Image (cartoon, rainbow, N blue to C red):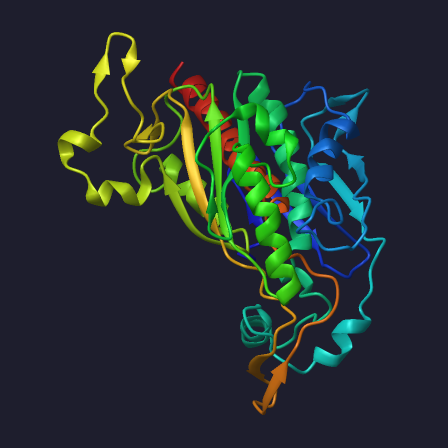
Length: 354
């Protein structure tokens, strides 16, 4: 096990480093005869790419996807799909000064301990640049889900302590932070400006909602749907926590409050978040993730060199103020990948029973 692959029937393997020649993904298990074009993938990559928002790094990458295999006459063939995105705006020079320093909040120390070697240029494999492959694969997964009427969306409910008070779906695409509350989005702009001027960074909370998911997806014990969703989301570098449905709120509820009553027309509320017993219930699947602040900041921080000598470090270069909203698309992609995998597993299970 190398830890670079994810999934059972719909399986992805991402590859590439932040400052390498390219990044990408190989997708194995995509069913044949699904219409797929570069444009289907590009729209999601454009939402993730740097240089597009107030909180984003000024690094300019076109993130133009190239489909190398698995497509013939505009449709999937059932064979592995290989997707490539070239790194075009790479500047490794700022990292030379830190090649022998463990940066606070980064994976430098742990990668060195695991492998005995690390790519110090932008974090190498530990960089958020790795998520390009996930987003590309997620776009393919969403094509599979669309065939079943399943839709995955994301929006920001909190950034830097500013929390959305309303959920207006029409507002999500109208502001830089994909916030469903117009007033909160305006306050987020000011919060980002304030923190950016100080040389610091921000964390936040993203909500992912799945509509149209059929009941029956997921396994009863170790491959519970929520367990695989949490694993997929927690595999994203900046994610430090996952909630499903009422989440940690259930700890403050009575059983009579927590249980979702049922009637002839279905569930009357959805504190379970669309999953019961590890299996989808047919209701909306609702997940929230906690996103940590970007560790690369301009403020001085204490750390050590690779020889464990004390130093202070001030990070210069091109860095995001917050992973939001670029990471939103990564979260959406991982949810779509998990659901596509479980959908195919359920199909195989039904076929086996037949």
